Image 1 (cartoon, helix red, strand yellow):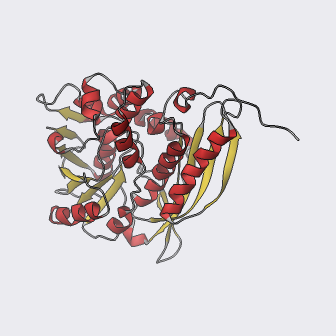
Image 2 (cartoon, one colour; image 1 turned 135 degrees about the vertical axis):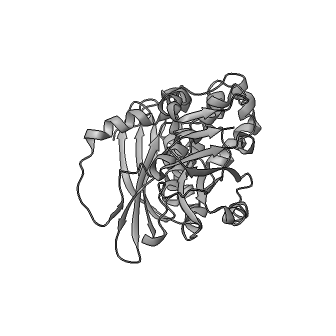
Image 3 (cartoon, helix red, strand yellow; image 1 turned 45 degrees about the vertical axis):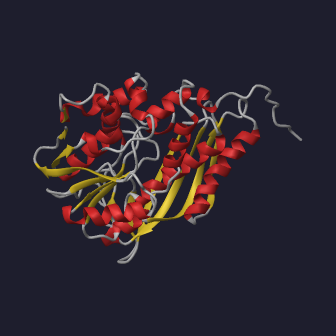
Length: 353
């Protein structure tokens, strides 16, 4: 019987990857160029949401009452604790179904691990972390696929269900809509500080609490007629995902910087110059559509483009429904949910004041 290799010097998970979490994502401008010729097109009447709108998941109508929501998400470690890594990755993958206004029903695990670098116990802890989140969501991990890879990779392919009439796309926002964000920002900055051993224990716990909080209110938001568009804020940062909504809906946005919620220590760390390489790529991809008020602090650009892993829901709703949406979110434990801006007619653009 072949024995597993004995690993005497266990490396930090974050030391095994060139990037972490949703900061690994290909920049949106590069991704758009890659997809121009890489994705075949065709006419599929029951495909309600495909690649055209840069949405969070694909949606296929099964019948008049049910639509299948399908997505996949995986990345390299954002933290060193294997159980926390698994939890964050699973929460992040499930979020795409909630961001379409649906409810997950099943997941498949996607696993790539450097078997010569990591002991089996570490890998098992990653899988257990992901399984614990799926158990919390009330769904099984019904299978998956694994490979021996150079860098550790973990995530899920997730299937969900929603009513065809309740699917919330990211390109159906309306002029005058209010913008609401459910979770605080700053995950990328805190993860960069962690990698540099400059993150305080209490800030780490705040990051874990946020990144492992399931975006379950998405299913309820999907059934609200006053909610017109929905997405989650992940690797492209707040500006990148807001801009996707603006471009898809043909609108412009105004964001109130003072209203934005932040994770503990995120702003102070950004002021100290800590940020990820992905924030620069995100700014490069969207800067021509952004106006930052001159009164904003110097670190605002890095904070607004900070890649979020397992970030919050970005909701575009009728202004009259703001209090109802905020109450729904806060009742489900999203204490820092905030009204952060509004949308208006005009060429897609974001102004932050």
